[in-house]
Image (cartoon, rainbow over all chains, first blue to last red; front, top):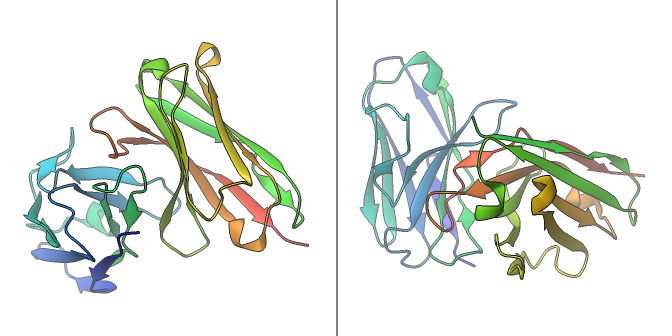
Length: 108
Length: 120
């Protein structure tokens, strides 16, 4: 199993700020990395796949980067609707995709 | 509009069984692979099982549920199922069905989930 480690566990941010979330894989996953957003009581929502490709309908303020073992999700200017938990997921070892433990982005 | 609606969750005693269903609409269900993913209370996401789209389906399970859970689908009914037997406390959580229509391994549409509680 590929261990995915996200940091930090919690980020306290003000609206309008730039935010960068990190995700590290225990072994190389190439660019087979996705990011999901989950709000309280809701299903996860796909944001990014292929490490940097935005899913349909995802605003341009979300961007993904990295390859191999180090990945980032950047939100260029945090909006009120962006406060949520963000998960990275590797799918290089399909079908046993593994998720990180999540980063909670909360209002400062 | 793609819709996935899970049902069948509830309270069950350890050792008991439940059958979850996922009703799909708004897309060509028979053309796409499906997954079950679960989330323990206050915890992260855990992939549970995968089934391919074909009639001779390819099926995979997480080690934590292998031998106890069975995934299946009925393409004529646009439905996905998860038969859960020998349930344990640690199986408690919200179970989501999710499809892969974009890229293998990427879950781009998710249902709202159904809560399974295993407790005596």
